[in-house]
Length: 247
Image (tube, rainbow, N blue to C red; front, side):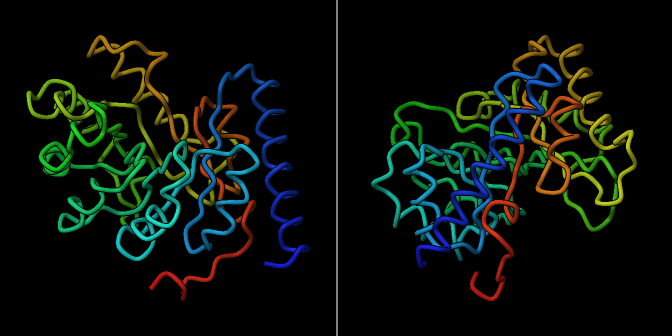
């Protein structure tokens, strides 16, 4: 990266941070986390933002990127990796071994919860449970991952009640990907909020402790308005992606 690229990255990052803060204040939303989605981007860019104080980074590819990046950046002790890609059963063990893995946001099946509970090493993680988010397919598009909204409660109950799961896993909240053609009333975000309310009502989990990961580069502002506590922004910070580099 030359000096111009570095300055552009920092300027983009500051702009998004300012927008998140502005919308959060406007709608009285507190502590909205910004996850910088760094998939297909070089570790150099991640390191630059880390040096600017950023800690939360999102990745989509386990073998191709996350493992390699986490090893190259192992000295950044405060980095928090968010896994936001599709989960393949044969890669769960690899994913669970990533240093500084903070949360897996894309769990959609009981079988996946079981495998993470089996693979997560409490001793290596300083007796810290693995944070889990349940991905909900709020738009019910066939092309998207996530459980059906009606199945969300059952999956959360399993996560917090099953003996093996609750020993190793911590239910952090819910995640969704909003439709790119959403109307102003944002039905996907409304649906996730309804799921959150239903979970709190039927499990005893405090409403305020259930986080919502919703909103990306094109829709993070309305997501915050509707109650998102974590937005995932990639291209608006890092620029367009080159998917040829992920392999």
